[in-house]
Amino acid sequence: MKTAIDTLRDSEGYLVDPEAWDDQVARKLASEENLELADTYWPILHFMRDYWREHQVAPDVRHVVGYLSNEQGIDKKSAKAQLFGLFPYGYVKQACKIAGMMRPRAWSTG
Image 1 (cartoon, rainbow, N blue to C red):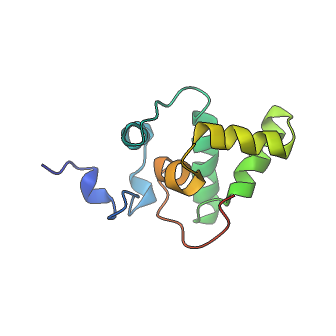
Image 2: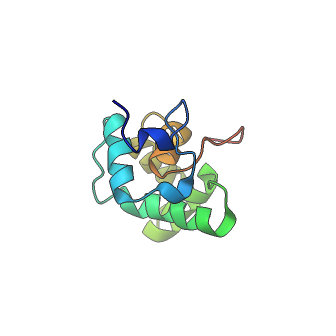
């Protein structure tokens, strides 16, 4: 049986319309990735959403790494390790999907 969220996604599970995203959708998408969204995830997801609202495109991984680096006062290598620790199957596969981005086309993911 299809749910409302299923009709909003493409064949790979990404939202077709990023405007359909909210925290409940994020939790559902995360659970499908076997992730539970603890407090450490939300600033990243909300940064990605804010970036999308401003630019109408998913932020490249370097923007998220820069955000984490600035917010936490850590070097970019540590920020990147933290990001990939939270999303172990990859930035596009998990972070972009859970943040409600459409499937990004070819660009740097790491």
